[in-house]
Image 1 (tube, rainbow, N blue to C red):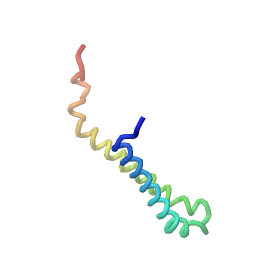
Image 2: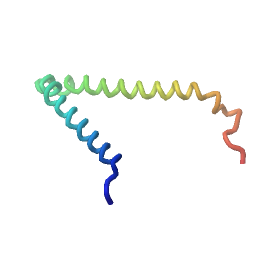
Image 3: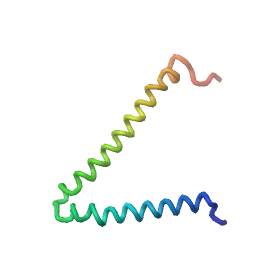
Length: 80
């Protein structure tokens, strides 16, 4: 089975992103955290990840708030 053009673009994009983030980590992140204690080194990295999750959750809440009228329990979604 031959990979399609879309699959090739996906894999090339994934490889380039992996390479770019690896180089950023090697050149900028690792020199700043290599001499720190584990807790002090992981705090900024985990804080960044926590903020991303918080943004995703708040986006989901905003979306559910906008669609809450359409999905209210007083109106059934499907009548059988």
